[in-house]
Image 1 (cartoon, rainbow, N blue to C red):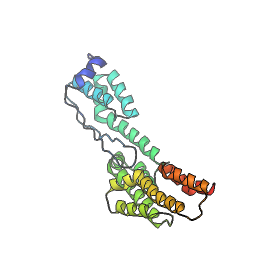
Image 2 (cartoon, rainbow, N blue to C red; image 1 turned 135 degrees about the horizontal axis):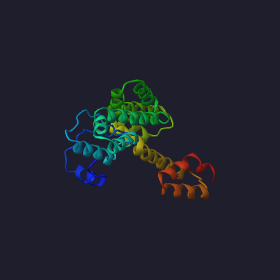
Image 3 (cartoon, rainbow, N blue to C red; image 1 turned 45 degrees about the vertical axis):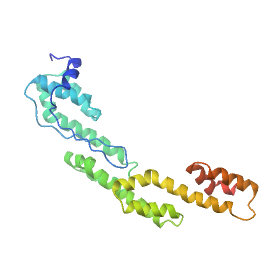
Image 4 (cartoon, rainbow, N blue to C red; image 1 turned 90 degrees about the vertical axis):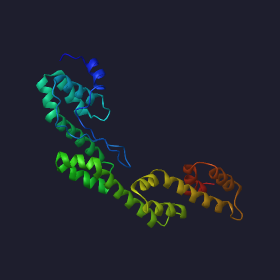
Length: 233
């Protein structure tokens, strides 16, 4: 190659990209980046090299893509054409397979079900799963979790109120509820319960002190007092 890697890095920002990379943001989980395969190769080897350098500089590029891109840059013009026409798509699918497999140990029932379908399918199926299917499956799992909270007799008034609001809302509303809203709603219910404890006739000094401390504490301290602390004083 006539251009050095440093020169390629500088040139990459000046030339139009040869590839279209799709990077959707997915709900409830760590965002997953999906790169669509490219079939267009710019005419000159310099432009092909710059396109590959842009892929290497893209934080969305996975390990397999970077590995094969580096091989192409170190190879011949024909190697670079081969990478852009077929090698990139294969490397992207390798990265997508790894991403999907990593979802299996912690995913909910719907996520695991759809992830396994994608693993058994085609590269296009895996791109579709990571681009849209994962978010849909995560929302399905979130819906199930929220419905279980509503059916739980231990759920307080605030939790049920916010859970119903989330059910009536969007997928993002449900993600936000499970990520932060549930914690705050539980704290609201716990504060009500602590106030009731403080209002009991004949409450001991030790229990009163512990309850007042919990009332001024964090949601986690409130929960600990309600579930354990009140029985230890």
